[in-house]
Length: 323
Image (cartoon, rainbow, N blue to C red):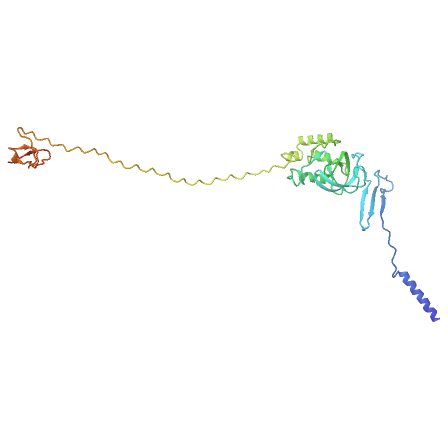
């Protein structure tokens, strides 16, 4: 009896272990690839369901366990043309360029990956070109495009004859969630100029007309920038022209050497006038000779000039008058 009780207890223990799953790994859950949920519009009793089609959300679970949800089949506003494709704005680059991703592949965007879109028939002032100076009204244009097509919003894109430019950007027209034609709105508000990109001209007449109106009314950049879409000239006061350094004082001009003193004119002295011998009637003149004295004359004589023989003792011009 005791042995049977042991067997029953052992069997019960094994059953308990199996029941609580100790040491038994569960089967792995198969990976979900996709599920589609369609939400129909809700109504209340006594009301009519709206005519808007249901919104379909496609939920994809990747092998890494991440989940992405893409909205599709959102009804386009009445103003949006029929040949469009739905996309979602990823980011704004500048006033005429943005990045979008298609909700589903289509004739315009053939993948759901992000692509750069260059809006057709418009040109906004540059802000991103590293080789060019930021242009007047560029920041305002970027802000306006962000307002019209904010990141995360639904938009519809339309192509023209040429799809890509040389930078592989998609050349497109764009309508926002309100049905507003974004290309046209940017020009109409003066945030972009109308520029034709042949052969794409589907909406050129409308867009170019909007530019004429904005320009005439000085709307946006047309009334703010001296030249729309070009660098605004900086109004600066030119620096004062420095005064030239003072010139060094010129060396004093060499003074003219005074002329040598001119000796006063002194006429050649005239020989002292010879005293006119006194007129003495009957007196003979002095006889000049090497040795003459009064003994050589019988009486007074008229002495020679200078009285060389000292005959005139009293200086009256008559010599030998004292004998």
